[in-house]
Length: 65
Image (cartoon, rainbow, N blue to C red; front, side, top):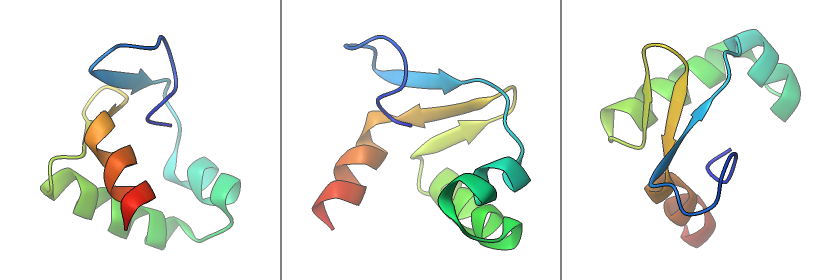
């Protein structure tokens, strides 16, 4: 999702999606999605007030860990 949208943007706003929908997309439970979204938000990788904003730094961390 960090690559969703136009290339070259510093971060991306993802259309509204529920945690249930996201859990179904990745094959896990809503509680696990909530756990990781809270962790990513605390680490500054995402924001989610009016939609999910994914910072490109999350993609770098996920691909290199």
